[in-house]
Length: 94
Image 1 (cartoon, one colour):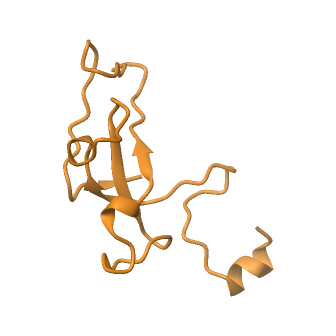
Image 2 (tube, one colour):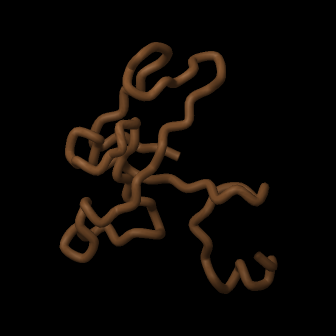
């Protein structure tokens, strides 16, 4: 975004490397939804993008976020090996 425009319109993103970083709070886990596709995905309310009021945007309507793990602790869906995500509702994530 242009610097002059970004001063007029606040942007709730981190970094300027072209990747859309964000900060959010976990509200739903794979255990809460049958449509989790077998992976470690979480319903995350993103600060600045989603209203804080759950009456306006309920948890079920939030997008799924996928866990990124470092190569030193590889993640394998289905808990067949490797690292496991320890996120629970209320955790803050980027």
